[in-house]
Image (cartoon, rainbow, N blue to C red; front, side, top):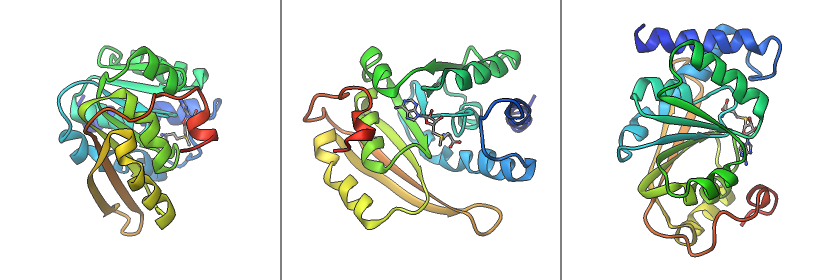
Length: 217
Ligand code: SAM
């Protein structure tokens, strides 16, 4: 199957599984093709600028943007989510499609993954997971030098933006790119904000599980 057909097949399987397990709030195929395929691929340009190596999708849910990006980029990929049930379904669909050699799953917290596999990723994505400062804190210990954190955002309030920029030095990250695009419906805006790992964080990371989200820096 061509990449486009593979991605569409994966989406259909997710929507089928979604009838019995909550994987995505989107149930219409047209909406899902826009928000789960087209939107997921919005960050492909940034992913292609990351150094060669392992790519991870943090808080992947039903595998978005991770699976479309993995298929389209051909990168070795790890999908990460703490909800075991979601990861089991995603893994079983990937296995049925013969994709589980190149796309693996990790059922667990991002903080635990960082303790087990520090600095192992050259690229990370995160969509609908947390505010920028939290994404930066969670991603920093997982990224290798010059690795990229690619954040899928919609609106970013000034306060969130300023806070993220103020934490760059502390977290060993530096703003790499910032691009806003419009999806093919002519109205859905997507902002892709990307940080590069430039050095060691100036604090011990990861903090205890849950703290990044419950007590943000
Ligand atoms: N990225 C997907 C998307 O855009 O369709 C799913 C977004 S969903 C709103 C956020 C996901 O992040 C949930 O599936 C949740 O289980 C996962 N998550 C939140 N915090 C996490 C953590 N610390 N470690 C692992 N997964 C986490």
